[in-house]
Structure formats: structure tokens, C-alpha cells
Amino acid sequence: MNKLLTVSLLFLIVSFSVVAIAYANALTDNELLLGFYTVSKKQDINKQDIDMISGSPFKYLLPYGTDLRDEVFLEEYLNYAKKKGINIIFSLTDLYQTSKQYPKTHWCPSVKESDLVSCIVGKFKDFDSVYGWYLTDEPTDFVGVKNKEKIKVNAEIIRKLSSKPVFVEDYPLPKGKLWDYMSGFSDVFMTTSYPVPDRRISEPYEVVKSMSSKYKNDIIAVLQAFGKYQFPRKKRDEITGRAPTYEEMRVMSYLALMAGAKGILYFSLPKIKKLPDFNDRWGFLKKLGAELKSNYKLIVSQDKPIVNYRMKGEDGVYYLVRHFKNKDYLIAVNSTGEKRSLEIFLKERIMKTITLGSLEVKILELQP
Image (cartoon, rainbow, N blue to C red; front, side):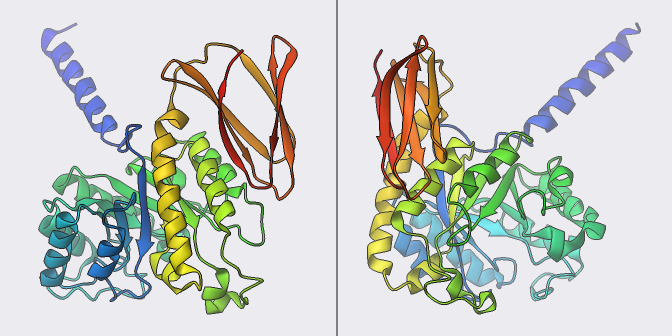
């Protein structure tokens, strides 16, 4: 083969590999991404949210409407976030003509979709507090399958200007129709699960697992921390549209991580603030966040267990066996409201039976 051709092909392969790496593994196994969606109204971005989570286990905010505010305000907001150690996932979700909010950013020289993306990303790409770019929100409905190319065009503009990760969200499978398409040009998938009070608490596991088993993109679970009664269109009261209990939130969080999520964003900070038990709930969330961060490396450990254990759990029990720091551990979650048992087998004999209370999470060291 011609030497020049060989070198050219090698360069092409190497170049392709570098590009491919940029589209996966934006998040690491070393630190759990924890934070909140925020802003109940597009114009209501505020420093108080930053103050609230500063010093807590939560270091990330995703405020809707960052693409709608003026540049002076955003500069001040992003600099304040840096000062307080908070990372902002910058929303660009209204920069589509199908958005009801489009276009209200008047400080850019053009209101063409692609020009707005280029203007805003170019302006804020070097701010330390900008962690990444939130490209689209429920695009199956709010951009439309027929307009999907616009999402890719915006992603390509971002890639030319910034190396920070691109986040996308859509409905869970199979309702979300654009996951396959977006997997090729985005880094992080954000998938939602709001089961309370209508559906099984194990739903976050199923939703995340359906994604992690199919795609290589990193996954963030967007979990329910609100009551459906807080949305008038849901036509619920405080009982039929109640918020998750603390135990339910803990179970959903562990199940999402066990299914492969590398981060959790709770929806949403404004709704949590309006719940009648806000003070107690916020105290619980801070403890839960610290607990999840403490156990995250154990959950994602890929080391093989010392012993080949076999498990048999009753319906609604989820479990993982992990080897971490020279020890084997069992992570067991009961997603039901009743007691459940989990049998641990070693060499075809029952070594131990674990009893799990209603909505209980247990992490135990396994010793043969």
C-alpha cells in the first residue's frame, strides 16, 4: 500500500477516535453529580438558589431560562455561582422556533436559531461555573421529530465553540422518539421518572436501565421531589398528587444509581420550597445527598467479588454485589410497602436470609 495513503488512513482513524471519545464518558465514577432543576418561571433565575445549596452535597443547578436573560445579569449570576462553588448546566432549550419563549434574547445581533446558539455559547463558554449545555427538553413534543435536524445543528455549533458536555432530555422510552438520533452528538442523557403516587417506586430503575443497557452515553436520572398537585393541569389534591415520602426518595435514588445513572437531578427546587414540610425535607435531602456520595464509589465499583454469591429476592427487591476496598458488599433495596426477604446462596446452600422492611435500603458486608 502507498505510504502516503497508509499515513492518511492512520490519521483518519486517530482523528475519528478522538471525536468519538468526546461524545461519551463526560461524567466520571469518582464523583456523583448531584443537584436540582430550578426556576419555576423563565425569568426567575436567582442567587438565593445558589446560596441554598452552597455548602451542601448538591453542587449542580439546571436553571431553565438562561438562554432568555440579558448578558449582564448572566455574567453576574455565573460569577456568583463560581464564588459559591456551584456548577451551572446552561439551558439552551428555548432556542428553537417551536418554543413559546423564542426569541427573547435581544442582546445578540441576530435572532436566527443557529446565530443565537453561537452568540450565547460564544459569550459564556469560558465561564468556570458553566459545566455544560442543556440542549433540548422533551424534544419529541417541543421540537418535533420532523425538526430533529435543528437539534443536531445546534449541537455542532456548540462543539465548534466549547469542549464542555452536551446534555439532552426526552421522555422515557418508548415515548421519547429521539434518543437514538441524539445519542450520536450528545454526551449525557437525562431521563425523567415521576411515579408518585400512581406507579411503582421501582420505575426509576426500569427507566434508567432501559437507557444504560442500550446507549453508551452517560445518564443522569431526573427524580421526583415534588407533588403532582403543585401543577394545576394535573388536577390533583394533596393526597392524590402527594409528594414522595422521604423513604420513597431514598429508594428511588439508590435504584437509579444501581441501574447505571452517574448523577441525579431532583425536580425541582422551587417546588420543594413550596411543600409544607420544606424545612424537614431539605434537612433529609442534605443527609441523603451525603449518604449517596459516600456510597457512590461502592455502587459503581467494577471489581469482581471474592466469592461467587447467588441471590434470590422476593418481588420488588433489587440488589447488587460489589467488591470494594478488599471486601464484598451487598446493596439491597425493597421497593415495596411490605416486608420482603432476600436469600444469599453460597455453593448452592443458603448462607443467609436478609429481611428488608418497607421501602428499606441495606448495605451489608458479605462474609462467607
